[in-house]
Length: 162
Image (cartoon, rainbow, N blue to C red; front, side, top):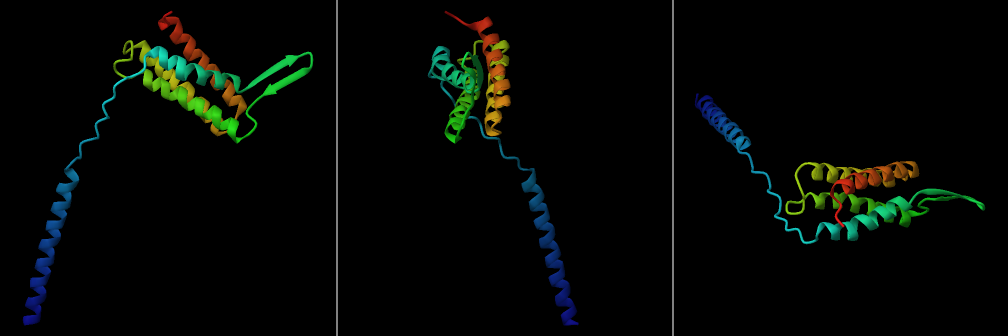
């Protein structure tokens, strides 16, 4: 009889502890950790400096990466030929995308409407250029370059200052 009592006491104790663990686990899962707040940023460069120092040089690399020229001597195709050239174009495409993000920072964005829309278009054009570089697609890079040109033209029509 004593063995049966001992098994009963152990079984009840395990049941109570098990219920305790379930309750504790349920409470812990309801505790939501607050999301990380973005780091405070302080814009340093002006929009003109970002355009002259990042966007213009990077766009030039992307635009000039792929072309076809017909001359009296024949057809001359230009495209990245090795890993280093593809990497340079990829770095410029990434710089374009990140420059669009920089243009949307508080304190630099001219307005929260068209400025943000056009900055996002630059980010997307840079992202598409980078995707074309990653797949080593000269056709994709040529098409993405058109997107870069369009995003620049649209923004300059509305916001460019002398």
